[in-house]
Image (cartoon, rainbow, N blue to C red; front, side):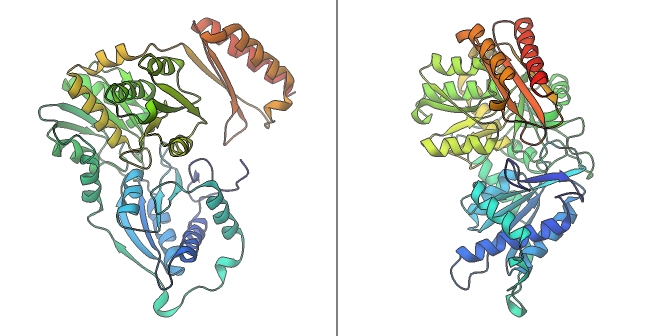
Amino acid sequence: MGRKYFGTDGVRGLANAGAMTPEMAFRIGLAVTRLARERAIPGHAPRVVLGKDTRLSGYLFETALASGVCAMGGRVLLSGPLPTPAIAHLTTSMRADVGVVISASHNPYQDNGIKLFGPDGFKLPDEVEERIETLIDGSELDTDRPTGTDIGRAERLDDAPGRYVAFVKATFPRARTLDGVRIVVDAAHGAAYRTAPLVFAELGAQVHAIGIEPNGRNINDGCGALHPETCSRAVVAQGAAIGIALDGDADRVIVIDEKGQVVDGDTVMAICATHMIRTGRLARNTLVATVMSNLGLERAVERVGGTLKRCPVGDRYVVEALREDGLSFGGEQSGHLIFLDHATTGDGLVAALQVLAVLLEAGKPLSELAGAVMQRVPQVLVNERFADRRPLGSMPLTQRAIDGVQRRLGSEGRVLVRWSGTEPKLRVMVEGPSEPLIRTMAGEILEAARKDMR
């Protein structure tokens, strides 16, 4: 909340405006290379892996970022369009100092963003992003720049897609193939438009690929994880066993069963976590999910002897919780799924392969597994925008309403009220035994908030 440019997932906004300008990208390139130089052994030129999705503005920011890195004496490895998790993997496998992704994920093409990974493949911690902001706004980057032969250079990493495809395939059980499995893959005209179909085809699947014709303006447009209905229709039309709908940078996935029904992140986590508990492969029998995940997921995990640990909204917080307690699997309702034994960040393709592995082992269709694993508790989420935002602790009527609703629900439900991390929008989530009841309760909380905010 206190950072000026970085949100929960890097810098993001309307391309060529505000904080998302080529001037800002240039200074970010300078800053990350400067920090890498401070940590490097003498004489080492920092190496930066730089990838992007398929947005028109990607060219603009790729050039600006690469210029910043070179101006500070770094070496840029340009991967071209690749999923965000691919850059995380390449950063570690190539022993690079920094990974940079130009993407606004699920946002429309007019937006863009910049995400940063450390040499360990994990997103940079808050304190490092704060240091980058200090450098961006200060004058330190404008002095002591290298000259002559110490200026950096950029080169194309032509085999980057193949490296990533090989990595993803290696997360699938070696004893199994996808021979004969019919799969629909929707790459959202985004970063995985080349790699996603290859992964499944090379494991033997019969792949029907859609969303693989990016033109710079159609990313996430009526397709992918934001619009799973497109994938659903294709699954039914093709008679496929499963549909895989990715978002623009392929770090999250929405799964479609053979009947064309959406299987969201909570149900996927329930399927995978319960299977991992039964087979002794879930570290400490504990799943990490955010405060937004359905109470039904918590109950499903507890039924097989597991525990659900909750964390704040945001895949970076899921990863932090996993690392803090030595855990192995967690995710978000939205489809960010982190299998820490395989990847350092959410990876839609890795997650899809783990689901397929469970399906093959169970020998059952996805609809049957999804229907049996958890009973979803009715949940409503309502939002309201205000002129500004205030700490919830200074909103007594709202607090009283929240406490009253929670007392009435008891163990049969949950209440979560929070401000959006990016705008003055209050989000009210209520879970309970019936939708009419919890919708009324959510309305009571919002009405109290309106009175507090007058």
